[in-house]
Length: 249
Ligand SMILES: Nc1ncnc2c1ncn2[C@@H]1O[C@H](COP(=O)(O)OP(=O)(O)OP(=O)(O)O)[C@@H](O)[C@H]1O
Ligand SMILES: [Mg+2]
Image 1 (tube, rainbow, N blue to C red):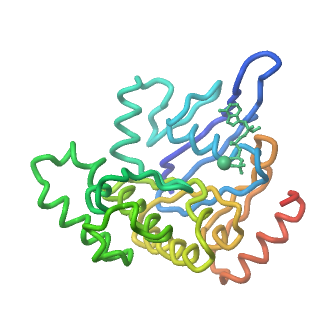
Image 2: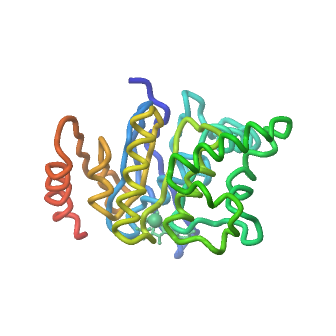
């Protein structure tokens, strides 16, 4: 399968001198088109840094990241920003939405500039997405008056409205209760079934058990990997739990 992302020996430091922290210590990994990858590992192991590094949100100290074969370090800032804006989508633990706008406007806002001439189509696509994630009817609700689960559904709509090639999530279910978390995970799985490449960072084995491959990080390195094919959810969960026991999680 073709790689959408390939990371070769990436190293990332934060700070200088005494304050220097090695957050990524020579990571090799790839994401193939259409796969659903999750990243697990203890707090501070470098999961978020890996996500920021391979998505061009943050510079790396050495090594290379290829996105569809292009070396991100060789592109200028604007080119990387274009890749992020047009070909990637992001969902975080806390959805940051604009408080004085309604749900629909928040969803279409980042895609609006690209589609200024076609606002009608954009609104119709956004409404369709809202319906498919179970929040139709909330279009004109002020963003501060929706629940955490609804807010996260809206942020997923916002992240995929421009039909990105890859969706990144850093603990997207971390702030949700278990019922909402499961519903959001089913949604990610559905998106992946429909062809979207997904990479999620998670602490939750139940979230990882929905994915096809799990990378385990420790001390800035990828220390292990599990691949799934025909295993049931429970079998995946058991394999992940067993593997994680050695990781102090
Ligand atoms: N902006 C920063 N400045 C300095 N050090 C940082 C910064 N961001 C992260 N670090 C350090 O880099 C290391 C990796 O952090 P990272 O946030 O990637 O871990 P993580 O696996 O995502 O942890 P968590 O599960 O708690 O979110 C940690 O030692 C962290 O303290
Ligand atoms: Mg993190």
